[in-house]
Length: 226
Image 1 (cartoon, rainbow, N blue to C red):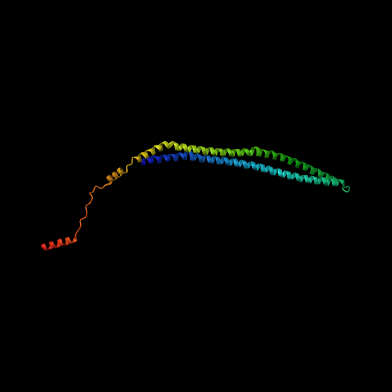
Image 2: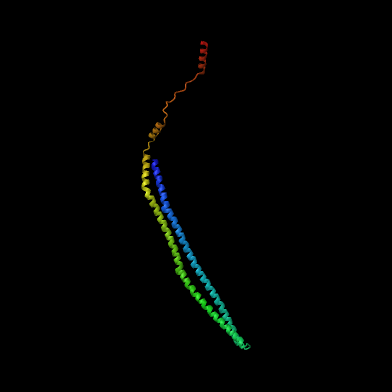
């Protein structure tokens, strides 16, 4: 029976070894790969978000520049109109305001065009960001999660295969243990143990009573007779 139990223990060692090599290590490798791929996807998402954030900041700067240029142009035009209507100003002074008005108007137009270009660029990038780029990142993360679940499913199946590969052997060993258990006869086993370990010496007899008075009387009689 102990031999059969030893066989069962050996099969459990086989199970442990197979699980370590074909299941545990495989899962460890897969986890490492999935973590790396997930990290790359998250980094890509962060990169895309930074690009959009930078473009939004550029749009905001161009808008503020346009607003300032527009206010400056409005102010220059108002100043020129007042100067042109002022008969007390010299022609040179009026011409100075005319040139400043022209410059500010041109700067306003350039700022307006830059703002329009940044607005168009931002809207295009934003549409692409939310309709194509980020959905692609999210799909990648979803695929990774599906892959993780599939790997877990495969590991469970492999575990069952490892167990079932040795199941017939363990079952046979357990049958041997049951047969050995059924063959046990406690009375016969006890008899065999007694037969093996008995000393063979006879049972000692009773100890005799030693009467000290009789022993003393006997000694006195011997002395008188002598």
